[in-house]
Length: 457
Image (cartoon, rainbow, N blue to C red; front, side):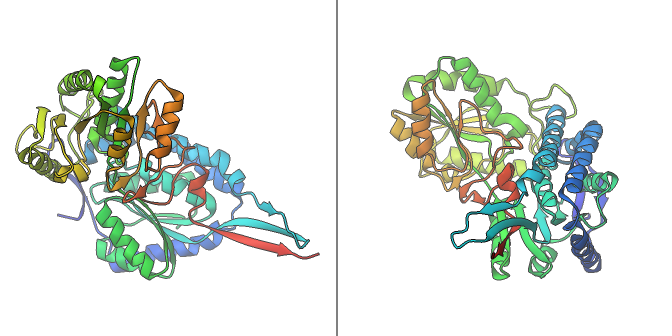
């Protein structure tokens, strides 16, 4: 079977296969992107913005078709797949509207007289290495700002998402992008390693695992290439106090179960004050247990299969390890069948810092709930992780919220809402969750040449 194939996780069937690029095809793609940069960098910012606007329109027009593709590829429930398209449309429209302003020259105060400006220009060809869990959204937050900057894109998608990768490339063609401005590549890991070292590649953006991030960063560092890395997360959901526990529990369940729990910035560790703990656990467990993983093509489905049977197998090993080391399972705890990618919504308690799972990311519908007796303990537990992507704090006290937010070691803190995303909000983490930022004006500033132009009188 080809490396790039659509294997429907709901059925286990291989539905489509795509040829992996030969070395010659990859060289041709790279040359095309490199040649296109010479033209695209000199295209006016208004024309670049217009292209992004047309791309947004096509995503909106093709929403149902595009959503159905990723439901087949990685099992995303139909309504959530359509919701992902909505976010993508907002990202392209955001940069179409705001990109020209973000690229405006910045005048500097010059002590010695004369004038000086900083001009933001594209660097060249960028390589994007994207994951399967949000096939369109992850690409949009990389491609939109960097095409606006005047860079060109080589996009290597996850091997299980080839159909969506082709659909995205077609959107850019149909929107009128110059040949080579956005090029999809079906490359092997060895080919990618060589490509990063290619002098025509000016930077690499990867969203994926710590292992992949480390490998890419090592090669890029040896070749003096900048990277942006968005890696794993084990985000805390800190419940300090609430006037409406039912509403908070609903938000907590959605924060864990959305996309089948397969989001880097999903809430994964629920840290609850002792006076609320028993009621929270009871209500959360009941709500999670009421969710039945089911057909992702059904608009009523909340949790579909995991992205693959191997993903479900790996999650099962993690849960089994936690149980063996003394964690308690309050609901769920296993796949629905040995040969299935469907995993039951699961709640674990009694997890301690001497267990392997305490330090790991659980990529699936499995929640860990912890009891704490003070605000200080809540902060200490929230920060006791190798990750630092997002976090959320729930309290009715605004001062308390700000005080705790200041102490959280993470790239993002959300108050009284689960961690999320929006085109205007910077996305990224610290520690082993990665480096750099995407989205908002900060997403425009990672891969640019801030060129100083100094003029003497």
